[in-house]
Structures are given as C-alpha cells and as structure tokens.
Length: 216
Image: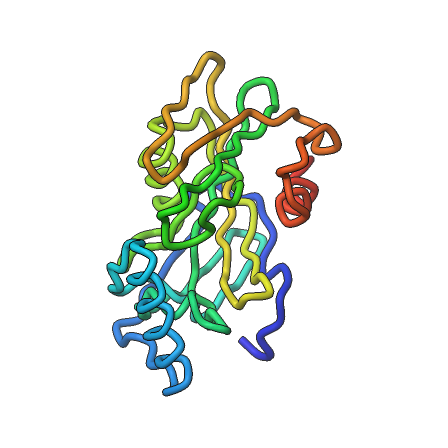
C-alpha cells in the first residue's frame, strides 16, 4: 500500500454488490511496540470500567477502486491495535445517516464506551468483524445502534484518518417517517439541519469536514 499517509484511499459511491471483499487467512502480526501500546490501552479501559473485549477485528491489507467497483483485501488483526499511537490500518465502518428531509443523525457517545466517549458522532459505526463484508457492517451497526433500516444505502469511500484508522464510509437514507431508537452506547441524540453551517457548537471540525466531503 506504499507510504501510509492520511487521506482518501478510494472514492465512490458504490452499491453493495459492486464491492468485493477478500479475507486473508493469516492474522496481522504487529511489532513489539504496537503490542505494548495495545496492552496499555486495554489496561486503561479496564481502569475506567469500559468494555475490554479484545478479540480480532479487521485490518485493511489493500484497496483498489476501478470503473467496475471497489476491491478490498482484509485480514484479521487484534482489535486493540486501533487504540495505540498508530492504528495500523485497522478498519471501522461509519454509516452516516440522513432522513428524508436531508437532516443528519448525530449521537453523543456515552461516557462508558471504549472509543469516542462523550463525543458527538454522525450516524452509527463500529469495527468490521472477522469474515464480515464491510457493507454488511454498515447496516448491522445502524440496526444495533438506532434500531432502523435504511431505505437506501451506498458506500461512499475509504479514508485513512491521522490516527492510522481506516474508515469505510457509507451513507444511509431513511424512509419518510422512519423513527430511530437510541441504544445504550449513546446518552443523547439530535437531528442536525441539512446545511452544516447551521449545525450546533458541539459539531466539531472533523464532523463538519465529513459532511462537506459527503455533500452532493
């Protein structure tokens, strides 16, 4: 994959059936420094009472976008690697949600959760499970976190953020009248206006940047 710099790795949109995903059998082997950082991160979560189910999740091994679709190669990797100083291309799915009026679903993460605690986030998100297709992760996380299914779902792109985490970004559009139900990983939610310029103060710069990137 060359030099690992933050940025756009692939830009859609694609339908789910235009995305191929192949899993490598051998798990990713981090070096000793990354392993030590992962161990320390898990210990810190234990100290503050957050979940510490440190199993295997997905890491992006390669990505290729062409005229016909998107090809992803994933491999199992220790989940807690994403918590270290360099997430080493651990991959998470981010399902941004808009309603029929164009409003954006935003939820504040609860204080007890392992990642992004007490921060506002767009839509639903979580790690890609071993053997799972990332497009399936988008709809699964939406159902788990907000108890709703999309009327339309597209994969919008693959991004590497400065932490070294890779985001597989999707956009879910809800049917008119669809109702969301917040899960225990959130302690508040709101529908933000279609124009990000009208968003409240709690909408930080990364959220605004994501909306600008996704806006038609």
